[in-house]
Length: 344
Image 1 (spheres, rainbow, N blue to C red):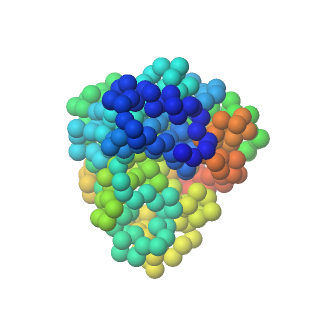
Image 2: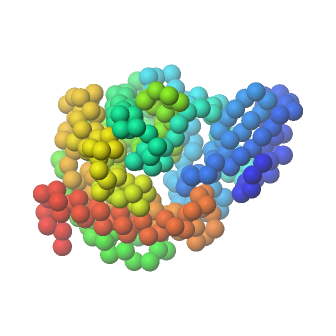
Image 3: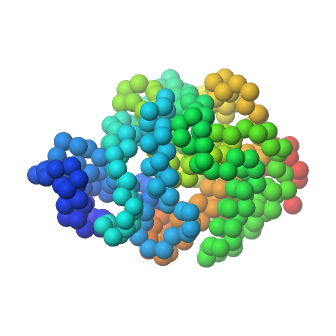
């Protein structure tokens, strides 16, 4: 077993023995890389699972909503959306310090770097197209048909999200970030008309939250559903477009790379692939991409706040603080280059 385990392993072992039958084999390993909810690989007998829990310590109301994450898995697993099989949810924090859930461990490939180093150009292109396909498949599901009709409030999604993330930013103990303040002012003043589109919005749909088939270019599991709600499909699509507007040093973006030589699709190619599978979707605007960059900047602020408090899930959380300003700057660049109103 590795370090940085924030609960007593023997307690989990006893719970699993009681729930599934006593087993001699028990292994527990903290998964590195996650920045929000602590995640572990658990082996109990022949069962290989993933445990997700809330971080210890104070958390913002509505954050780290692993109960919602588990519900999504329950509803989407029978549908044609690649997710892990849910196993159980345990709401009582008395056992491990916070609520937690267990899901099936799926074996495949995870790529944290959007440039997909070490692969040949054709495979890079195919994997990015597979990401667009998985996003389109998720958005094609009608929430009310899979038991998620009450998973959020339909309509005015961007208005409500901007207010939510602005409030979180304003409540942070972070140092001032003027660029983030400017984005927070511009976005509500430039909301596009609400076209009435409603889908399940993942909230963190990106390359690093996918498990790809071990050899084929296709997504076999979408991970990290804690930010999911009913929302607008263009919120996720704008989020997926961020790598084209951030550099490799900014959380693994692809801005400035030779896309053609590497086999990386252009942003237009990626968006076109998605649109071909979701015809009738409104155009992706600079607003949607600026909103995504704003929201991720605030997420970085939250990670940095938890690092200062000593409750961050990721071992490199303290390094995330400068990214909040970088992403805010990128959001302003998108606006300035996207034929929107001048940013003052």
